[in-house]
Image 1 (cartoon, rainbow, N blue to C red):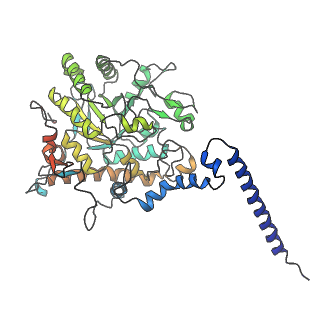
Image 2 (image 1 turned 90 degrees about the horizontal axis):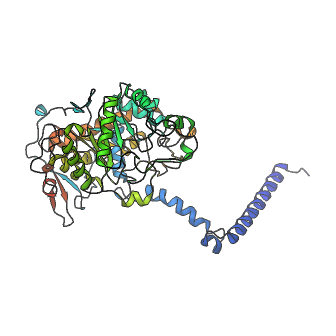
Image 3 (image 1 turned 90 degrees about the vertical axis):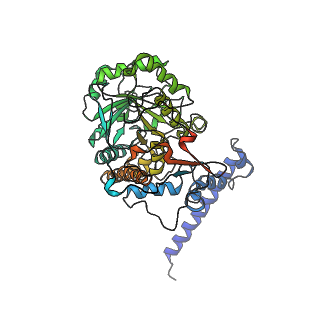
Length: 499
């Protein structure tokens, strides 16, 4: 009788697999019963593991199957889809009506004009000079919407390269973030704002002090248009930047001037800046050293910071003022941050921006200090609201991350980003094709500017810089709306932002 050896082999393998599975279950059972860390596993060995598995998978099931288009945080599907369409140049057209809740408290309603601006009467949104009259090399900024600070380290090499090339094509600037200036920021030829954080990455010597030679070398790059002193950021005011050691590669370490493989944690504030006068002294020093505009970036906790800053500027003279003020809302955050700070510290951009604009306007400094707004301003409607408040420019980080293909996996700090944006794993970075994504970056910036102007024309003004607080209303808890100029009236002696 012939023996079917293939069947025998299959039966034997099946038996071995069954034995292996049983042994694995026994090992898991013993480990779960004897461990003391997890109560559920100790009481329900093996099957208790399904709880943790389902808990981990639940995040993704909710995102794709259960949450509706307007439910998710920090950005819902409708918002992400809006950005994706702009980045793919597919237009912001929808059918059968909006899913935006016009009755929800805080909803934005722009005041359409009975006779909107004709095509023939529209004007291009004019560029604005930054640092004109205060430094040797002022900067003319062309785009309303720009790339907010994302450090090389927090985001990957291909992400920085795609942002640089896309920003150049769109005519917007790119902020380096506090991780220093890399060759990839310069690769695309875009305008660059060099950010200096509390750890002085990229401009420090071996002892962590300012290295004047390095600062002059960076300033010598034609594309480096301005410098920004970061006091804090919206995601973690009161704490410095956090880059886990697994993301500190030798290249990133060399650019930052720190050891490779170690956690990169910035001090919670600049050691040399402990007062408003210290801040103004440091601004003046850096502006004199580089010859370029110098501004500040900070989250805001109340009305006192901007008011006191303006008082000290007036006491010293308008020349002492920063050339720009980047206001970061408490809802900001494209990198790692402690949840306690991300959730509960710092005013939202909805309240912080009007407070800063009002303080600058009351001091008569609107023409001297350019205001930049950031904090979840990823859509044209939110950006137009910021311009109505009095901002001169809008910065966004996560908007451009979506343009690069971000799917909001919430793994930015783990070095396992599935889209290659916030990881230094070469296998995952392979998915981010620079030659494809830079065009989406450019499309997003260009279409954001285009839609902001569309909103402005609907409101009856010729371009976006003519938007005012009276052009937008906010839904109140009662269901009615209130005009922004009533909710936040400008000081009576305020001057035009274009002054």
